[in-house]
Amino acid sequence: MMYQDFATFHNRLMLRATLTLETGLRVGSGAGDSVVGADIPIVCDALGRPFIPGSSFKGALRATVERLARTINRFPVLWACTDPLDHKAGACVTAKRKDKMLADATDNGRINERKFARELAAETCTVCRLFGSPWLASKVRIKDLPLLEESWAGHVEVRTGVGIDRDTRTAAGQVLYSFEAVPAGTQFRCEIVVENADEVELGLLLLGLREMQQGHVPLGGARSRGLGWGKLSDWEEIGWVDKSNLLDYLTEGKVGTPPKPLEDYVKGLKGVLAGGGA
Ligand SMILES: [Zn+2]
Image 1 (cartoon, rainbow, N blue to C red):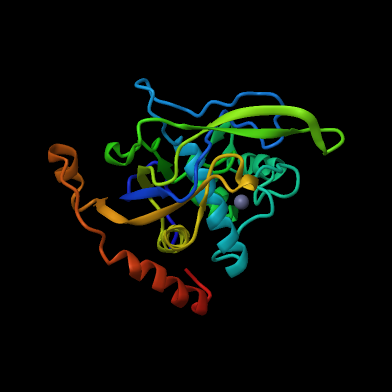
Image 2: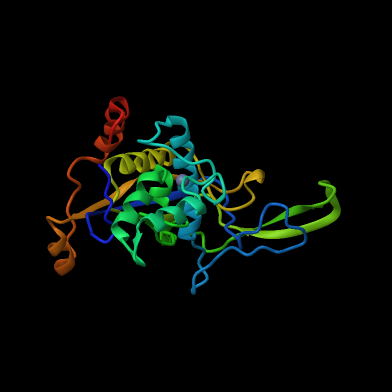
């Protein structure tokens, strides 16, 4: 089943894990690998300690989940569109289609928002439903990842790169530039909040997180130089809020445990996909 009603709270899953850098990490201003002659700072908090922007981590997680969804590919139960940013053709719901849905849901100048949200969700791919599209809010929220004090060496490394000429694609003479990198071994705390995900969406997301636990998490820039690999380690804390404990949560901050072990959502995917229906 799919939750159509976005105005209503159904459930919230909160996860906390540790991200350990396996190589140095450059999380810069978003500049690519071919920057010439620029010194690229890493992002730091007010106290000068580096952190990983939640958006960077979310991008890496989305890419992992997208890859999995394309491999599994069981339209319309679990699938990924070709290019969520291509509003003309590649996105699951194009701008034109969205306008048509909006027109269909409008009567006498009044938009039936529930109807619109239902139709929109029905045609949106699993990945865009989880991570958001231009027309649909993301169900996954990731805060900026602060570093774990005890893992922090207290300083960043400064590395030197050779500039690549953008036009000729060759090393541009002696164009050297330096950039900062967070040393390998540094750990960050990762907090993920998932709201109103159905069982298929949750299963797929957890599968993506499991990939990140087993393999490498590609983050930040300069990956072609072997930088930017991290690994997610086991969950430290799992919280669950739904209608049954919403009051406890709001009044006392108490969270519950998910209705079934998280592992079961991943296993459940198999059954759902075999049955062909959610
Ligand atoms: Zn999509």
